[in-house]
Image (cartoon, rainbow, N blue to C red; front, side, top):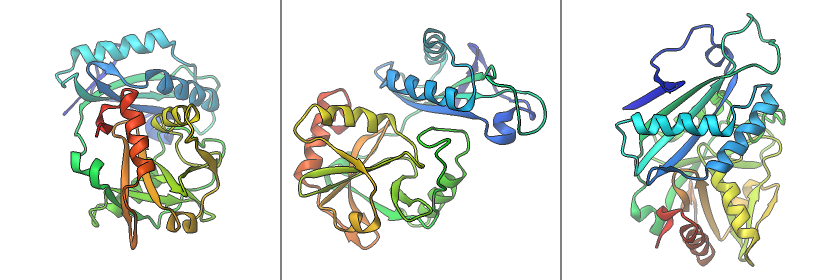
Length: 281
């Protein structure tokens, strides 16, 4: 069950001519609500600002957007201690055809959903993943953003459902490791943490950004660059991040297996110490 609001009023429909429906012309953010507060709010808003600039949308003022989010949370029946908020911006109804004037004044929808926690055992023993056959197109124009066009993720995620895999890892059209269908991926080799560059495709997750900033302030650090299937196979440890679960170890991808090692444990502890309580030991 979810509750949707537009300008603080319940919303249940969208015009068929809305560009978000017609062309996927818009953006979204999925935010963890913990103890009544939107976690990593500043990072979510920063990404939304970047996306609005890239797509030619007027950026909602941060105070106005936060007020709409707070109103939706106050009006929703979902548990504010552990829920999810989704903010959707569409380019609205404009002239027919792909082209439109820029910047467009976006329509803003806020939805609130009940969250489902990841099992405690998954943080201890890790989760199983698979390598998806669906490849991500290389498109720097929208790389890093959460646009409303998620067809590649839909196709890749659908591959996971029959297998029972917790997550599917994706490669780009040239065979580089990019991310999961709903997560960012990190590998550890010889105690060095590495994560794929997202300059060409993939979503620049808020938890990824949060973790990178934390790692930069420690001796661990993290190298961002090009990673291949061979790098994945050669890794000592693998873990995933996303805004809802924080970080979670990976113990398998197809025939590849990994232990939940000391570096991953350090990462979980680091996030737990900085407010991501799901990662507590």
